[in-house]
Image (cartoon, rainbow, N blue to C red; front, side):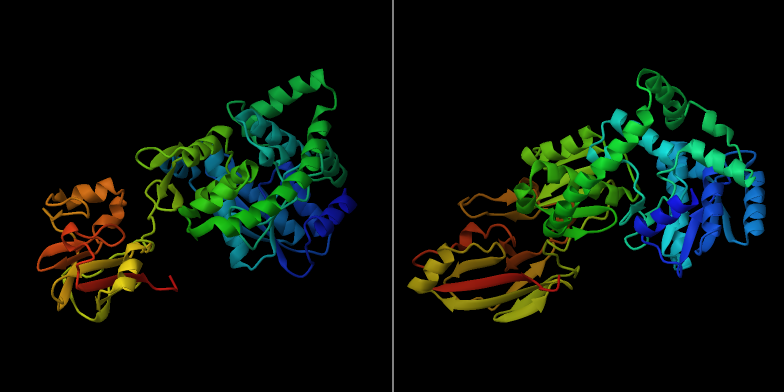
Length: 478
């Protein structure tokens, strides 16, 4: 086993013997085996133990781990977290909450000590159980591949890989190794509790299936190992789709280019959506077919409200030429919408330019209308450029935020006003963008809503003498 793990560390995990490795150790057979093997190889190891505060014996477990690492001459970092409270706050199962907290602390520790990797003790049996769990939940190719010897990027880091050196080693081999080395380990009673889904898979489903098909575990493991090459090929294409379709990305939302998404093959879309969800959720998640299908359905047929809840606390919405996939209560971006930062009206002398905010500027200039300029105005496609007709040259315009009771005469509605509030709703201007949307006025009358329509009173005709050109411009660095 020592030589097998040594080969995996070098060939699959690509580790060097100089930089540190943070090793997760619970005191169970897998982590004791992993740590012991690593101490027999020339690696720089730091052990990490997390007391989840879920079991009465957890303090004894921490003491056992401390004594074992001391015996092996390995530095230990140990922490205690109230996982039950975390699960309640996040509305997660205890299983999921414990896993999230564990990996968050493992990678935070790895970052603090500048480690080259985080190592955990998942074995071949864990791989089989994971694949079966994914299959039952309706996961895609990612789920059938299951766990990887090396995962980078991963939900916790883009630079520190998660490695699983024992992933090719069966639980029975680990038990034999511990007996042969005379090593004790902790027996966690919760591993026998079949109220946990994984334990039902381990103690009930796998033995049942194995009675029908002897050697089933090995067949499942081989299948997942073979499929990883197909997934690697697809992921290379998803990498390109990621770079080509993402307009903006933060921890709690992703903005996607509608046209780029439309160009993708359905398979690539599905894998891209899975990756995006994992990014937003900030941990590995079992994503079933229904979630991906909800996103695909929305893209094919957006709802009347241009938004939809897709599950897992996530929403998708269509804004202009962009889709936004986001977590509930996410602080969604405003950079693509003109906004005015001042609470008071701003006067812009003509000609002139001024800043609306850190991102947006506005300029105004007067032209004398001729045949060519009239043709250009009629062909104008820039929604943030407006041409307005006047008999006499205006001296200045006013830029302000909307006011209660504002009314507007959109182009084409001769003599009819509409509530500005209703106008913004009808045009599906996002609620978060309406408050600070710049309203362009002249003599207290709204003459233009940037991005939308001018007032019908100021439309340019062949008889217009003076034309006011107004531009709202987004700075290039944004």
